[in-house]
Length: 216
Image (cartoon, rainbow, N blue to C red; front, side, top):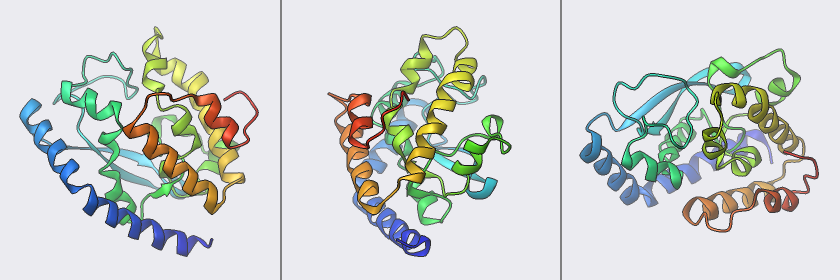
């Protein structure tokens, strides 16, 4: 599949998804305002294709005027009650469909990272930044419970930088080098399945299904 065709398909599918999911988006927006007021959305600068920054959209899941580290663990007191539900089912990520429609992201691609953790001198990062970031990829699916992993650390940011992020970069690089239309479709279906029905999720099973044999 050519890059231009992939962009056209991504934008079309994202636009259709926004229309179909509009009732869920509306309910989420009302719940956020009811629980913690405005704003509904949260914008964060992320690094995209070829190292270009862009504003990544999310439903706001943390309290207004929150401060602290950019790394979030599952027990983070900044997370609101509504935000906890949105995060559990990955609904806070749905506004990024707008990023896809705008051409800043793809449906499938490495998750965009904040500038603080991006090292353009690292060969793994250069590979990851050679493609458009996405709503989901193999690394984000395998680490869908990342916040739980970080919750047990005395220094979540240090653990993320030294262990979790390098593993995710290796997974993303593996997927980029072995990507196909069939694998993209499979990854989309698995992402949807485990977002709305997370029971029974097993990272190792997902890795085996994509023929990844190394430790993540």
